[in-house]
Amino acid sequence: MWVSCPQTALLKAVQLAGRAISTRTTMPILGYILLETQKDGVKLTATDLELAMQVEVAAEVKQGGQLTLPARILSEIVGNLPPATVEIKAQEGSPQAEISCEASNFEILGLPAGDFPTLPRADAEAIGEIDADVMRMMVNQTIFAVSADETRPFLTGVYVALDGAEAKFVATDGGRLALRKAQLPQAARQKVGVIVPAKAMQELGRALAGVEGRVQLGMAENQLVFVVPGLRVYSRLISGQFPNYQQVIPQEYKQRIRVQTERLLRAVRRASITARDSANVVRLSAKGKKLTLTSNTPEVGKAREEVEVTAEGEPIEAAFNARYLMDCLNNIEADELFFELTGPLSPGAIRPAHHSDYVYVLAPVRVYA
Image 1 (cartoon, rainbow, N blue to C red):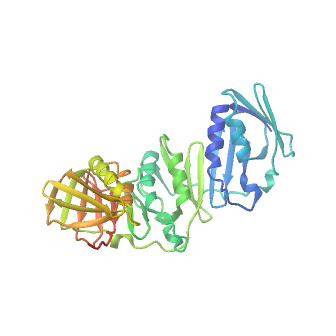
Image 2: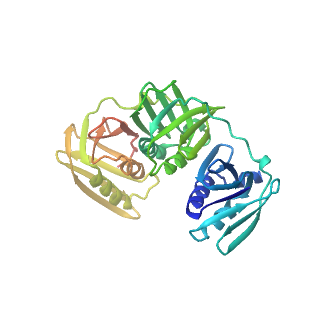
Image 3: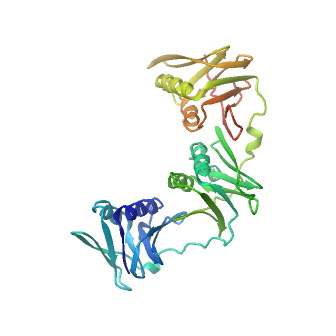
């Protein structure tokens, strides 16, 4: 193998591929990145056997081949090289590689490329496609509601559903639920409903920042594959039945509060300063054009905030976890929202004021006077 490419492009590829690597592994090869030459570049692959990132970088290929290099060492080397052309050389069959850039030269020992896990091949025909920016938003608006409880693995991922011309991403931890819908550019080629682990969705969302165009989705050997030019993300699927999320979404309300998102976010953030109990409780009560937020922790103090709103229906006082509220408000991407309540002990629903593609359902916190 003998290739050369810009340091900036190589560093970006190494860092992106390396995000698939787990720090907790008993298999040494999983701490390495596989480099394979292609016609006009190099393909870098890393995996933890549940998530795999495959990144392509344009390069001048003087001699083809493949090798593995330790991800952490490779990242440190490339990250500290000057912004110039980097050359990587290795003799065929040798695990040792030479990395050079201007006056810097390294000799790094890898592992046999044949030991690297083989990734499944995606189906030739994708099952559907979503605009990259829309998918990034769908991930960001649901990922925070995923459960961390490993005893219920079916809640530790995002439910990805494609049906006709509509896509849905859903996440819940049992105390809250986030649902984001989007129209597909074209109808899905098959109906799909799978659970994708949180790590894979989180890394996908990060990788899509600034990406234009569409993301192709494919199924392969119990894995979902996301493809954009220069990047493939492979994720194993979580087995199990995702809950019937539709039945927990309130279909009616007794009070609806319309409020500017940023104003409410700032008020909740300030009120949360004195919400130091285990549930970070903030109480909300709206009448007419005023929403009052209060929090109280005896050993810390208390806070009171007032926000200008428009409220309709009967006044309801309810308490919610401030952190859960802020998770939604930080990601709803709407200037105004509706906060819909049906009772002090019933779930509340937050929706953008100007479209119906997103809903966040939040269970109240039972408080005692």
